[in-house]
Length: 207
Figure (spheres, rainbow, N blue to C red):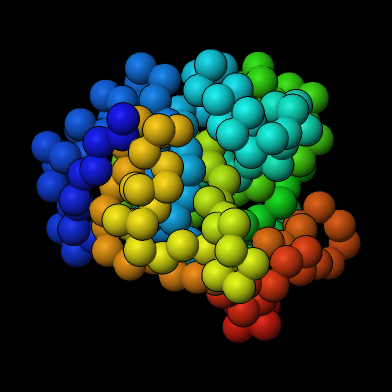
Protein backbone atom coordinates (compact mmCIF):
# COMPACT_ATOMS: atom_id res chain seq x y z
CA UNK A 1 0.00 0.00 0.00
CA UNK A 2 1.21 3.47 -0.91
CA UNK A 3 1.57 6.27 1.60
CA UNK A 4 -0.26 9.52 0.84
CA UNK A 5 1.89 12.49 1.87
CA UNK A 6 0.56 16.05 1.80
CA UNK A 7 3.18 18.63 0.79
CA UNK A 8 2.43 22.31 0.13
CA UNK A 9 3.98 23.69 -3.03
CA UNK A 10 4.47 27.23 -1.69
CA UNK A 11 6.74 25.93 1.08
CA UNK A 12 7.57 22.20 0.88
CA UNK A 13 8.20 20.75 4.34
CA UNK A 14 11.82 19.45 4.40
CA UNK A 15 10.85 16.57 6.72
CA UNK A 16 8.18 15.33 4.31
CA UNK A 17 10.58 15.75 1.36
CA UNK A 18 13.16 13.62 3.21
CA UNK A 19 10.54 10.91 3.74
CA UNK A 20 10.02 10.74 -0.03
CA UNK A 21 13.79 10.80 -0.70
CA UNK A 22 14.26 7.72 1.52
CA UNK A 23 11.65 5.89 -0.54
CA UNK A 24 13.30 6.94 -3.83
CA UNK A 25 16.75 5.88 -2.61
CA UNK A 26 15.56 2.40 -1.73
CA UNK A 27 14.06 1.92 -5.19
CA UNK A 28 10.51 3.10 -4.52
CA UNK A 29 8.10 4.65 -7.02
CA UNK A 30 6.62 8.06 -6.31
CA UNK A 31 3.74 9.98 -7.86
CA UNK A 32 4.41 13.69 -7.52
CA UNK A 33 3.08 17.02 -8.83
CA UNK A 34 4.74 19.05 -11.57
CA UNK A 35 3.78 22.33 -13.24
CA UNK A 36 1.63 20.27 -15.63
CA UNK A 37 0.20 16.82 -14.87
CA UNK A 38 1.12 14.47 -12.04
CA UNK A 39 4.17 12.33 -12.82
CA UNK A 40 5.29 8.83 -11.88
CA UNK A 41 8.98 8.82 -11.04
CA UNK A 42 11.95 6.97 -9.57
CA UNK A 43 15.68 7.43 -8.97
CA UNK A 44 17.47 7.52 -12.34
CA UNK A 45 20.25 5.28 -10.97
CA UNK A 46 18.01 2.45 -9.70
CA UNK A 47 17.57 -0.27 -12.32
CA UNK A 48 14.91 -2.22 -10.39
CA UNK A 49 12.77 0.88 -9.97
CA UNK A 50 13.14 1.72 -13.68
CA UNK A 51 12.04 -1.82 -14.59
CA UNK A 52 8.97 -1.41 -12.35
CA UNK A 53 7.94 1.79 -14.14
CA UNK A 54 8.47 0.20 -17.56
CA UNK A 55 6.33 -2.78 -16.49
CA UNK A 56 3.53 -0.49 -15.27
CA UNK A 57 3.63 1.42 -18.56
CA UNK A 58 3.71 -1.84 -20.55
CA UNK A 59 6.93 -1.01 -22.41
CA UNK A 60 10.44 -2.46 -22.60
CA UNK A 61 12.82 -0.30 -20.58
CA UNK A 62 15.26 0.19 -23.47
CA UNK A 63 12.41 1.46 -25.66
CA UNK A 64 10.73 3.65 -23.07
CA UNK A 65 10.71 7.42 -23.61
CA UNK A 66 10.99 8.65 -20.05
CA UNK A 67 11.92 12.23 -19.14
CA UNK A 68 14.82 13.21 -16.91
CA UNK A 69 13.48 15.61 -14.28
CA UNK A 70 16.26 18.04 -13.30
CA UNK A 71 16.33 20.80 -10.68
CA UNK A 72 18.03 23.21 -13.10
CA UNK A 73 20.35 23.18 -16.12
CA UNK A 74 23.58 22.70 -14.15
CA UNK A 75 23.63 18.91 -14.68
CA UNK A 76 22.89 19.08 -18.39
CA UNK A 77 26.43 18.15 -19.44
CA UNK A 78 26.17 14.94 -17.37
CA UNK A 79 23.68 13.49 -19.84
CA UNK A 80 23.63 15.64 -22.97
CA UNK A 81 26.17 16.24 -25.74
CA UNK A 82 27.59 19.74 -25.92
CA UNK A 83 24.93 22.13 -27.16
CA UNK A 84 25.20 25.37 -29.06
CA UNK A 85 24.96 28.66 -27.25
CA UNK A 86 21.66 29.53 -28.96
CA UNK A 87 20.14 26.21 -27.75
CA UNK A 88 21.32 26.87 -24.20
CA UNK A 89 19.78 30.35 -24.29
CA UNK A 90 16.47 28.87 -25.46
CA UNK A 91 16.54 26.37 -22.57
CA UNK A 92 17.29 29.17 -20.11
CA UNK A 93 14.32 31.18 -21.37
CA UNK A 94 11.95 28.21 -21.22
CA UNK A 95 12.96 26.52 -17.97
CA UNK A 96 11.73 26.04 -15.33
CA UNK A 97 8.52 25.63 -17.29
CA UNK A 98 6.01 23.27 -18.92
CA UNK A 99 8.37 21.92 -21.60
CA UNK A 100 10.23 18.68 -22.27
CA UNK A 101 13.24 19.21 -24.53
CA UNK A 102 14.67 16.34 -26.54
CA UNK A 103 18.45 16.61 -26.80
CA UNK A 104 21.24 14.30 -28.02
CA UNK A 105 22.45 12.03 -25.21
CA UNK A 106 26.15 11.62 -24.43
CA UNK A 107 28.23 8.57 -23.42
CA UNK A 108 27.73 9.17 -19.69
CA UNK A 109 24.05 8.20 -19.59
CA UNK A 110 23.15 5.80 -16.75
CA UNK A 111 23.58 2.16 -17.77
CA UNK A 112 19.88 1.57 -18.42
CA UNK A 113 19.88 4.37 -21.00
CA UNK A 114 23.20 3.63 -22.73
CA UNK A 115 21.51 2.70 -26.02
CA UNK A 116 19.53 5.92 -26.13
CA UNK A 117 20.56 8.48 -28.72
CA UNK A 118 18.34 11.20 -27.25
CA UNK A 119 17.02 12.19 -23.83
CA UNK A 120 14.03 14.27 -22.76
CA UNK A 121 15.05 16.95 -20.26
CA UNK A 122 12.46 18.60 -18.03
CA UNK A 123 12.79 21.27 -15.31
CA UNK A 124 9.27 21.73 -13.91
CA UNK A 125 8.27 25.06 -12.42
CA UNK A 126 7.07 23.32 -9.26
CA UNK A 127 8.76 23.66 -5.86
CA UNK A 128 7.95 20.09 -4.76
CA UNK A 129 9.43 18.51 -7.89
CA UNK A 130 12.51 20.72 -7.65
CA UNK A 131 13.02 20.01 -3.93
CA UNK A 132 12.87 16.25 -4.59
CA UNK A 133 15.52 16.37 -7.31
CA UNK A 134 17.79 18.71 -5.32
CA UNK A 135 17.65 16.52 -2.23
CA UNK A 136 18.07 13.29 -4.20
CA UNK A 137 21.20 14.69 -5.85
CA UNK A 138 20.43 13.36 -9.32
CA UNK A 139 17.49 13.44 -11.75
CA UNK A 140 14.24 11.54 -11.32
CA UNK A 141 13.17 9.50 -14.31
CA UNK A 142 9.55 10.33 -14.96
CA UNK A 143 6.50 9.62 -17.06
CA UNK A 144 3.02 11.20 -17.03
CA UNK A 145 0.23 9.19 -15.45
CA UNK A 146 -2.62 8.81 -17.87
CA UNK A 147 -6.23 8.20 -16.97
CA UNK A 148 -8.06 5.32 -18.63
CA UNK A 149 -11.05 7.57 -19.23
CA UNK A 150 -10.64 8.84 -22.79
CA UNK A 151 -12.34 12.12 -22.01
CA UNK A 152 -10.19 12.88 -18.98
CA UNK A 153 -6.75 11.73 -20.17
CA UNK A 154 -5.12 12.95 -16.94
CA UNK A 155 -6.41 12.69 -13.37
CA UNK A 156 -6.00 16.00 -11.55
CA UNK A 157 -7.24 15.05 -8.06
CA UNK A 158 -4.42 13.55 -5.94
CA UNK A 159 -6.88 11.59 -3.78
CA UNK A 160 -8.32 9.87 -6.86
CA UNK A 161 -4.78 9.22 -8.07
CA UNK A 162 -4.02 7.64 -4.69
CA UNK A 163 -7.09 5.39 -4.89
CA UNK A 164 -6.11 4.19 -8.35
CA UNK A 165 -2.36 3.75 -7.83
CA UNK A 166 -2.36 2.63 -4.20
CA UNK A 167 -1.12 -0.90 -4.98
CA UNK A 168 1.35 0.05 -7.73
CA UNK A 169 3.54 2.72 -6.14
CA UNK A 170 5.10 3.46 -2.73
CA UNK A 171 4.22 7.13 -2.23
CA UNK A 172 1.63 9.51 -3.67
CA UNK A 173 2.35 13.17 -2.91
CA UNK A 174 -0.75 15.30 -2.54
CA UNK A 175 0.48 18.65 -3.78
CA UNK A 176 -2.98 19.98 -4.60
CA UNK A 177 -4.87 19.68 -7.86
CA UNK A 178 -2.74 19.01 -10.92
CA UNK A 179 -3.18 20.35 -14.42
CA UNK A 180 -4.85 18.29 -17.14
CA UNK A 181 -2.47 19.33 -19.91
CA UNK A 182 0.95 17.73 -20.28
CA UNK A 183 4.20 19.49 -21.15
CA UNK A 184 4.99 20.61 -24.68
CA UNK A 185 7.64 18.32 -26.15
CA UNK A 186 10.22 20.10 -28.32
CA UNK A 187 12.89 18.30 -30.34
CA UNK A 188 16.15 20.27 -30.34
CA UNK A 189 18.25 17.68 -32.19
CA UNK A 190 17.55 19.08 -35.66
CA UNK A 191 18.45 22.38 -37.34
CA UNK A 192 15.30 24.08 -35.96
CA UNK A 193 13.25 23.46 -32.79
CA UNK A 194 10.33 21.14 -33.69
CA UNK A 195 7.21 20.65 -31.56
CA UNK A 196 6.54 16.91 -31.22
CA UNK A 197 3.57 17.32 -28.87
CA UNK A 198 1.74 20.55 -28.18
CA UNK A 199 0.95 20.85 -24.49
CA UNK A 200 0.87 23.59 -21.89
CA UNK A 201 4.03 25.43 -23.01
CA UNK A 202 3.97 27.82 -25.98
CA UNK A 203 7.20 27.57 -28.00
CA UNK A 204 6.48 30.82 -29.87
CA UNK A 205 6.72 32.75 -26.60
CA UNK A 206 10.31 31.67 -25.98
CA UNK A 207 11.80 31.71 -29.47
